[in-house]
Length: 335
Image 1 (tube, rainbow, N blue to C red):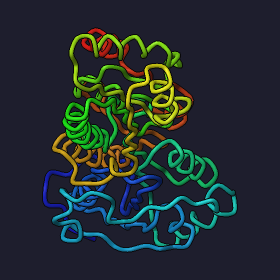
Image 2: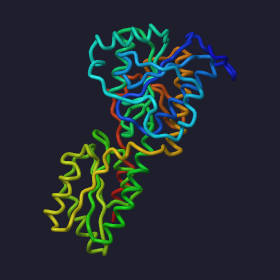
Image 3: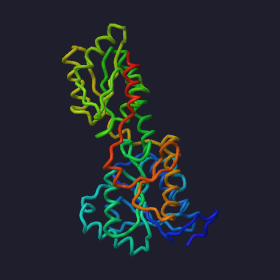
Image 4: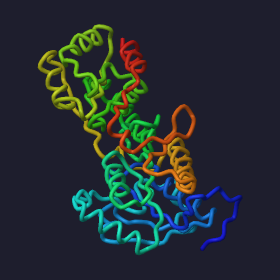
């Protein structure tokens, strides 16, 4: 066992070995979270097992040992060094039972899962059915998990989308076109709303507000009368019809040239910005300490600048709304 190199944290749970995996869609900052888990655990004399390819790798026993040097030079890297995958097998009791056997065969005392609500379902049922303590870290760019102000990867996704919006505004103004830009967010409009305000968009469409597209036509016409050379419309992918539907309605209603740009998975990639690196590092450290203290079946988050612990079931059963103040601000500033 690795000797601790800093003051020991209370460990009434007797944790000696933890496993960590990343699951679902990758998010910038996942590597920073893995690094924090490994180095915090090592500092407390706890060994770390990395599970490759998420729950798919867990039920196959695809394990590697991780030490401080194995996570060196990963803080700035996008994606996940442990790889990720979606597993249909893990959705079955038999798949989870097999994964539990692999964990016990490797003397793993607890599991840390970095992912979204689907990943948290898998973690929750593992503990419920097999008694293996689990902790979740919110790794999803959509920022749609209840129990944390922000999720790992969200800040980077917003910056990536905003950079694209700035570039498209230049070309939109040059050609006097309307650009309808679709950002990620299947069930939540957090990315769309932040990008709309920071990018000076004329309108934003989010799943939380199923307003009619017809309402934007007057806004576009008014923009033209005010001398605007081009307009930017932001659409979350979860809005009914998406960017394509919105663009078609605008073109049919105004006769103006309209272009669609779907940013897609480009928002998942790239080096994480500082806010994601810091958030992931704090959450990774907190996850290890939480397991040592005996906490489990919870997600570690940050709310009002404090570490918080939310039951995993609450993260998908309770809804996290967008900021209505920011939504109002987007409308006010779009004139």
